[in-house]
Image 1 (cartoon, rainbow, N blue to C red):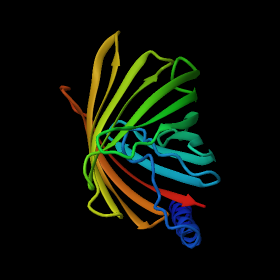
Image 2 (cartoon, rainbow, N blue to C red; image 1 turned 60 degrees about the vertical axis):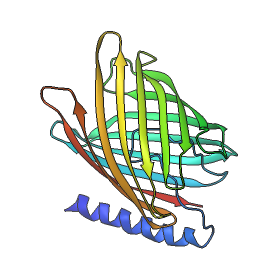
Image 3 (cartoon, rainbow, N blue to C red; image 1 turned 90 degrees about the vertical axis):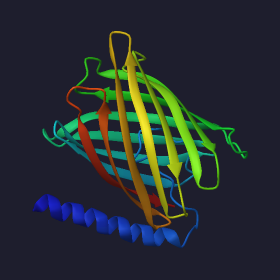
Image 4 (spheres, one colour; image 1 turned 135 degrees about the vertical axis):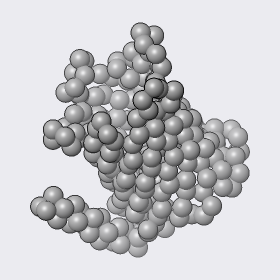
Length: 233
């Protein structure tokens, strides 16, 4: 009951902060959730964003919190924590820097972003790891876009790839279907698919839900996730 009260208080706080932020700027929030792909978009200088989500499956239950801050034009810094709800305890903490390298104004030609990560993990054999990601986004039509990318994990031991199609019928709702996989020369690849949608309650407050599963396994694993994003200007 105490945890429920804390979560309700956090949601009310987000709604209040969002209402204050609306009067300052009309630009809509742009989050890096609930999909697996990294976005190219970076926060404008001086803006702060909170992204929080929960993932539930038969094998695992976890929470993720990301704090983003626009450092300078086209550059943002981020602090991310993964929380194991079964323990409960933080399983990993990641500091990252995202740089928008190129912003395309033409369809089919992708915008490009580069992200560098430094992670501390309690669960992996390597306590500290450093990795990188190259992200791409292409506009196909006024409603359809394509996002894809490749990143390393485990200190460049794994290659993680993502590819997704986004559909946004209006400026409040968008949905996606995504394939993502992890490759390692020492084991078989891990293939996954997920889908979901996000809805903007206000220009600075987003709610999202997603669901997915593993592919080509004898016993597939399923998950469902919910979350929110809050932009504070």
